[in-house]
Length: 211
Image: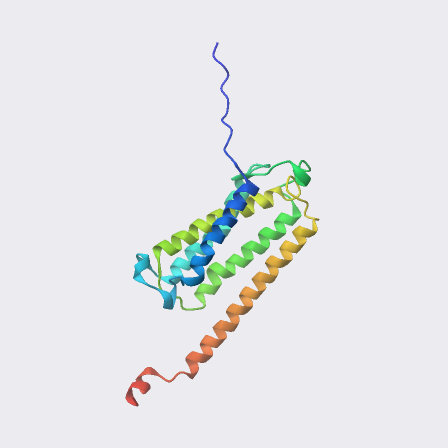
């Protein structure tokens, strides 16, 4: 007698374990990034590989983050995405109201708005020098994984992970919004300074005549 066909169980990775490994990878990269400038604009060097226009590279790499987040969020199961959550400890069980969770909708709305500015508005308002294909590729990989992490967390808010009423959820959201505000404010200050510098600089032709 032929045994009934079984559907293979998808392979998921434990969220906390994956997040710990991701954090460890960041710590390993920190010393390197502290002494080596990313080859963007004035720091561009052909030693890092083929060149790509900085504005195009930036818009591509940063657009991946919200696209990856929405893809993973909308295509996740109720209890697992790329990563699964342990039901042991304080977050086990609970409601399965993932997709319609109000807290998740707030975070998604903020995230998309932030990256609309970061990936589209900001690069269109300024000049960005060349960069290299490997740099853009590494940023794309980071944003893919980042989208998977955030999507998994948001799908589990209110269920196996933690409640949206948790003080940690509120604190994290406040930190994220504050960081986005500082990012936009700093960009505006730098843009105004650059414009002021370019207006006060003497024309190149006049400089050559009087040199």
